[in-house]
Length: 114
Image (cartoon, rainbow, N blue to C red; front, side):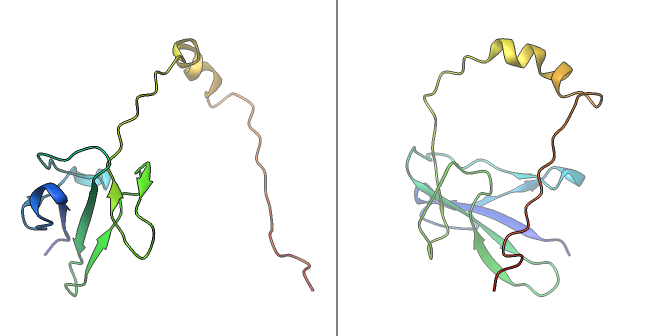
């Protein structure tokens, strides 16, 4: 038995069975399509655990906007921003190479507090 992921939205009357997501193999990514989803509308993903059938509604971890807790839906957002980073993108591979210098910052919050 495998885990089951389904997407629901206002456009499908919040029916978690209407739009099952498909696994993209070992990548850990699940994908699907929900017709009629509109900008600034909520959408949610329901996951069902494979071992005990536990179900939970989840927000999209990559969403630009989310509902305020305790609500869990993501808000559909399409950015109108025009990127102007063509020069940076062309040079990105050289700057991000394994030989490039790197800075690592480490913070220990709460250490030494009385």
